[in-house]
Length: 217
Image 1 (cartoon, rainbow, N blue to C red):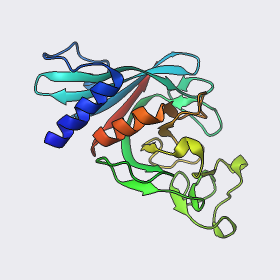
Image 2 (cartoon, helix red, strand yellow; image 1 turned 45 degrees about the vertical axis):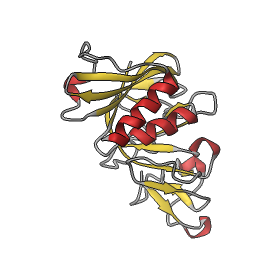
Image 3 (tube, rainbow, N blue to C red; image 1 turned 180 degrees about the vertical axis):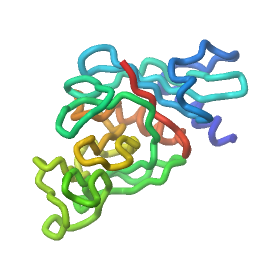
Image 4 (cartoon, rainbow, N blue to C red; image 1 turned 180 degrees about the horizontal axis):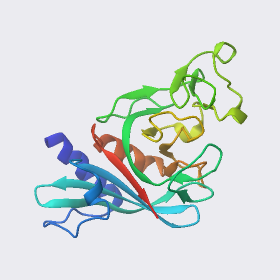
């Protein structure tokens, strides 16, 4: 608990928003997240931009520990149901399953995978491992590694740090994959949510299993 409080204070110091001392008005997602105690809220503000708020549930209710973090979303905005290649960010409530990045593990409560040139996110709709992370040499991968297939090599600057969003966990071909919260390159994404890397690292240090991301217009 002491470490969690230290991390929360670090988030507040970074973002400049102090926790409130009493229960606040229920956030928009409050009735949709079950017993979750950590929620990242992403609300579109038009086009490919959004505001991110970070919430912790306490005995006093939901407390904001980071408000108004600028975020980029899909180049074509958001949609309730996304499909491969649409360049839209999915709307809904999603798990945050594990973290990865080209950089060493910065610390935090989620499992972390340091990735390199042999790490892929399988976007081949004909592959039995569609919408999962895979490790293989390009010439030996059993799935299509051509970017046109939707497969991504994870050794790119935007993935210096990233957190996997649990979108299309049933891995239905065509319903989209490779949705992450990752470091921004300063522009719209192909459907992910992207923020400043320094802020992302602070959030990753705070996250624990069971955390959710809630996305809406």
